[in-house]
Length: 503
Image (cartoon, rainbow, N blue to C red):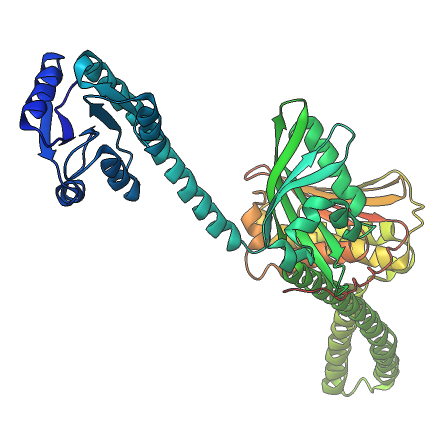
């Protein structure tokens, strides 16, 4: 042994005690021994310290081996007891073994004592390790039960059999609050759970479980149930991890939680975005209508009035007496001012809405490209395979707005020396591509505050069922591509909130 053996020796005879210790020492052990021979002394010794083994005489005037065994048993100690006796019959030996003795040795045959002690010490180490493991297991189970009981939802195991059926080997107590089904009900009949999954969502759950079983993939499923008692609709989230069992079975461990509140928030956010999108689309349409109306009034009313004024002014100039040079000079000055005003009025009307839009999208784009080229002195080429593009007026207005906004950004930020434009129609989609060789665009440009022009492009295209993408890299130019369907998209149908239990 690597350390002294703590022996509690229950023996009233000092001579017998010395005999036992001599035998133990001669057998190669290192005993540290305390001798007791009354019930009180043994109780005090057991309470005072830990012992490795108890060696007790069977019969003593004031005590007995059975009493020593009872003292150890009452304390539930993992302490081996060996009975030593001068004479012991078979009946007594059986009695002591039933009482808890690990072995018995006759004083006339003490050669068995040391081997018995060594065996019991080894076996007692095993018993101690087993008790420690059981206690650790019990503590872990208690800890797990405490954790599971505090999970917002339920923990469970789901087993898939060879015939494709499912059972619940384990279900936590949270199932009653979550599903209105007790753990016992689910263990007895797993169909109770699958029956309350809504018919629209059940195929997705079964598909995810089948794929998980085939490929050993985690299951992340979200779907709805209708509880069997209150008939309340709830959104559930299942998170499962699969593993193989012997015999080719598959079992999942996971948790199930109520996500009704989050789903309701998501639906409300989607509805809010739809309403904002509809509002944005309405404001954009109202803006286009107002620009068209103002452009028409500027061109027709103000432009018409200015034309009439010029006619009257020319009439007056032709009738002024050449002897009134000052009046003639003033009239000529008014005519020049009127011409500039008519030119400004015409330009304002064109900027509000180019009249060429009435003739077609391509004509308006070519005209705007020409104006940009004259104004900025940057070559701007337009390429289109066909001049006949059958496009809805609203889509035409949207593409032209994207084109005009793109040219505005190029003139302000790009530092480009050339711009290329391509307009094409294919597969029911009209595509406008505008490329420049400027400084390029970065993702931060799309997200920075005040970029309402870029956001307006994206939102307007989305409202019409299309998209706008931005490509390129720093120092390598930018390409803006707008794709819209030839048929205007229908407005999105608002999602119903529905009656869900978010508890």
